[in-house]
Image (cartoon, rainbow, N blue to C red; front, side):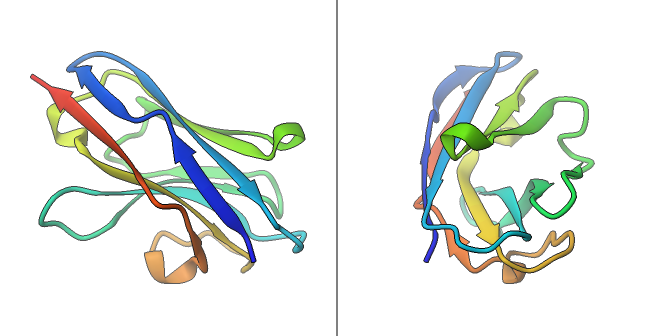
Length: 124
């Protein structure tokens, strides 16, 4: 059973930056992937970025490409979402997720483990 705990959300002005952290524990599988999703009020959960434990590849959503970056510090069992040039439309609850499945999954259905979420509000 993998436990995920996010931190780092808050209120930020448009154009600013913030870094979200997710600490994981209990991982016993060697492949799989970790990812960030977000969910704005009244909308479906949306894929943001993924980092594969299987081969180290990363992929991010076109809506954040060039502004957000996913990274991992395996020594600290943590991964991060560096968010730059934030826009009001980036306002959402941000979730980290993990899957033991091998592949790149952009649907929430591909993930077995979820954190509790951390809010990010971008003011204009």
